[in-house]
Image 1 (cartoon, rainbow, N blue to C red):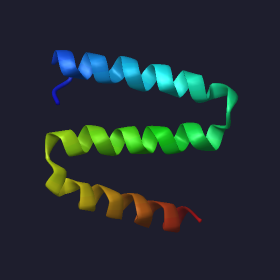
Image 2 (spheres, helix red, strand yellow):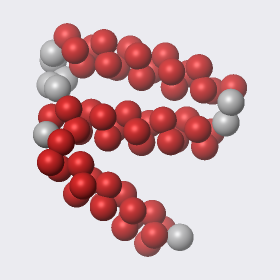
Image 3 (cartoon, rainbow, N blue to C red):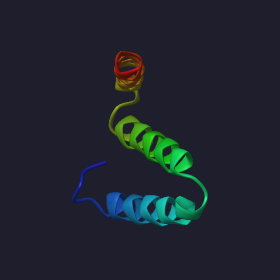
Image 4 (tube, helix red, strand yellow):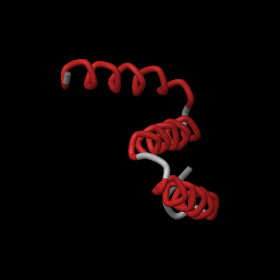
Length: 65
């Protein structure tokens, strides 16, 4: 998914709408949603790199604790 593609524009609008819909729920759910949306975005490009990104997320989270 390239930034200049129409599918990215649709993806962005959907993610933005859901993110703002979660505004009244909880900040934690907003953060989880952005994380999952990021995984979908990167996975759309090449799913084989998802394990690397998830590993990096876990390591960064553990170091930040």
